Image (cartoon, rainbow over all chains, first blue to last red; front, side):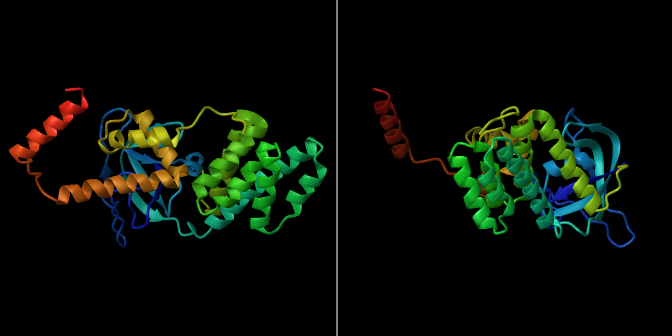
Length: 201
Length: 85
């Protein structure tokens, strides 16, 4: 089964610090074995899991043995790196910006719905990100707390995982769990399309 | 802000869990929740790295020597005094 895995620079697992060997030329990478106990093993992502696990490198991985599909990850008996996804992290700023713009749109719509037209228009047309952050923070401080998500997303834009999380929480604040799930699905679809990842995994 | 989702892990809880995490003592679901927190919390990532580095540095010091008898006695006296004798 093919899946994906985010790794730190040098193909290092971000949490365990283990270095994953990369394939060399036409030679496949060696298998990395996971522990056999329940819930343990090699962790990887199906497309829908990707927005929850960002890092500097994205790799296509082959999984083998029984594969369990958890809510936010796949767990397999063993796995190996197949190839690096070239367009990541080059397209990271575009991903972050897309999260930010969806968050802005949700907040603008919510402001209009509350009859706060002037503030909505101010947020909608602002092109300078620092000014957008400041304007959103001012609106949040005035009692319209959901605007704070825009400010947070701008402030945290160096961190794609955090921006994706903020966008999902903004969607939840406006539209509950359904909004959250839709936003996460949009993020996964964005990554799948822009990185031309096969949906079949 | 409104919270329409189940509560996420707070940093104050996450830092308490770092030792269990590094020792592999967490159940899988707790570990996943902890790692999810790391993805969205650069501050806790830094903290985890510091603890890892600290463990590595301590390990590089080699075997710890026990304190001298006199130091041990003084420490015990201080400890007992702090507990009300």
